[in-house]
Picture: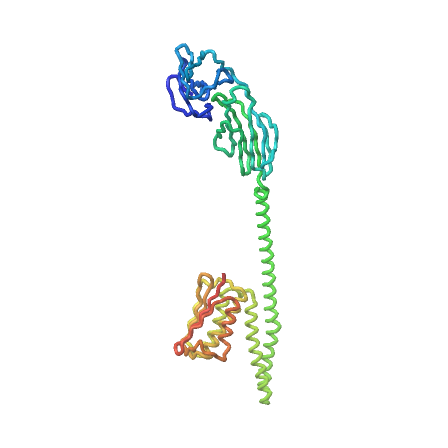
Amino acid sequence: MLNRDRFQFKLFSTTNGLNSNIIGNIHLDKNKEFWFLNYGLLHFNPYNETSTLYDISNGLHENINFDKSIYIDYDNNIYFGSEGKYETYCLNDFHYSSIDIKLLIESIEINGQNYIKDYGNTKNQLLNLAASQNNITFRYATICFQDVEQIKFRYKLEGFDKDWVLAGNDKEAKYTNLPAGEYNFILQVMNRGVWLDQQIKIKVVIPQYFYKTIWFISIIFFVFILTVFLIFKYRMRQLLKMERLRTRIATDIHDEVGSTLSSISILSEIAGKQLENTKSSGILNEIHNGAISVLEKIDDIIWLVYPKNDKFSNLELRIHEFAVPLFESKNIQFKIIFDKNLSILKLPMEVRRDVYLIAKEIINNLIKHSECEMAYINFKEYSSGFTMEIEDNGKGFDTEASSSRNGLSNIKRRSMQFGAELSVNSIVGQGTKIILKVKTI
């Protein structure tokens, strides 16, 4: 609003008072208020920013266009005309009566379907919708019998629109794909360039889809955690059950089969020494050796089955116990190295068994065939597991040549069965190096 002692710039258009954006002649009356030719005679008060349009509906003899001439004299008479004629009025005779305007919502459309008819002009209403009812069209109007051309609208959906939407003469507000939430639709009307105090306010509530609500997500999360816990608990029970079973099997084999075979071995050895019959003594000696061999195999089985041996450190100890006596019996210099980081690694029984049996097979072949003077056993950690390297400086062999021995083929077959990578490098006269790469994760 202007002050008579100072001024400021402000833009006026069809959204805030004009009935057209095309302006013709402008003149100032003695009250310092403006008169425009604007497809009619438009009076504009810059101090309260009100405007009134006059045409044949409220005072003029004929409609006038923006290209007419206009003049206001000192007595506040206005003249306008063209084509050899003019019309005059005293501006003091114009009647500026207030206009009774009734603002109302004609209908509300939800998802293309008419939801409510004749919603009325109740100032506060509640619109409870379903989660899928998020496309809304408000249609509104006014009951007004004077200066209808100067009626303008604006609306705002609080919670969605950041500012007022200036609708001009448009009588529809459309919203699509509204997110869940609570909104307030507010509608206001303008007359003669002034926004009136009356307004319509409708509260719109769109609930969230049930599967997106906090309580539903919480239930799903709780069910998921409970399921994981129950699966984990079941798995732990199964592992404990398996561990007890393995312990019982190892104990039973040791107590029952192992002690029986030990007795057979001892008794056959004693009987063999007491018999004078050489043939009978040889048979008993064979029984004794067979019992010793079976005892060794059963000892391996007990070691493999017993759960407390699943740590890598027990595999290290077992390989030491097997390899060292063999190397010493053949006067072979040796070096056995285990990465300290591997000591706490826990191996599944199947992996521990296959690695141990492959190591035994390689060491046995080394002892029997390599004719070496030096042997190396090295276990090293890598990102996904560990590697076992067994190397000697013996006579080597041709890896491409066919052989009647099954040791190498057994090693390859066993390594493939549990997903390990095996590489055999041997040069005749220079020795052999076998690398087993085992993934544990």
